Image (cartoon, rainbow, N blue to C red; front, side, top):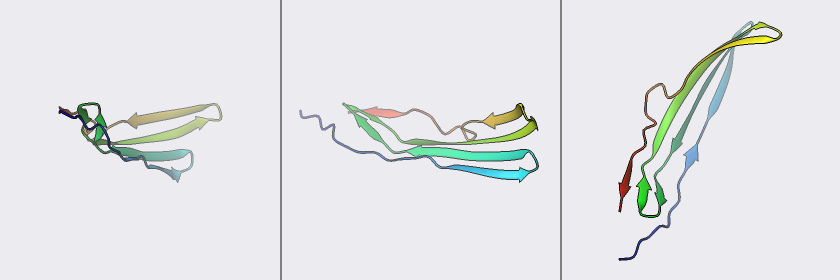
Length: 81
C-alpha cells in the first residue's frame, strides 16, 4: 500500500536564567517535541526539564552543578507503520 510520510512537528525549548545573589545564579531549561514521521516510523513526542546553579568563586573560575532530564521523561519511543 501507499506509505504517507508527510507531516510536521513542533519543538519548544525555553531557557530561564535567574540571579540569586552575589556571585550566584540559576538556570531552568527544557524542551518538548511532538511526534515526527520519518518514513514508516513515527517517533513519539517527548520532553525534558534541566536545572543548574553556579557560583563565581574568582574572576577566572566558576563552579557549576547541573542536572539534565530531572524527571526522566526524555525516552525515545516509536511506532512502525
